Amino acid sequence: MLTLTPTASTVIENLVSREADPQTAGLRIDSGGPQSTEFAVAVAPEPQPGDQVVEAGAARVFLESNASVALDEKVLDAQVSEEGAVRFAIGDQAPAE
Image 1 (cartoon, rainbow, N blue to C red):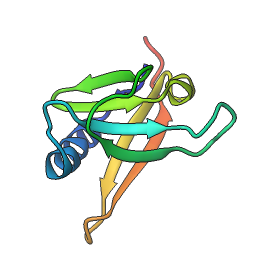
Image 2: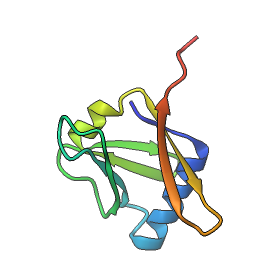
Image 3: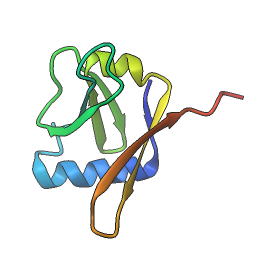
Image 4: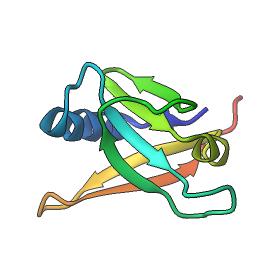
């Protein structure tokens, strides 16, 4: 399952609270198809049918089914530039010891 870094959780919480009801909304990641290597990211008011919901603190991420498979065992991180632009990055989870 996708995990979120503390930074990503904070950024997602802030994005969602500015655009939608944080109680039901989240960041939705859509793959665009089973063979896609790019992801669309947008604040969504609620998960779509079939979405996997990942929660970390108050942050919620909705993964479209193909994105859920592609991002299994990955880590979502975020960076915010000095201008306020948000950039998400996906990395591999550290192996369990």
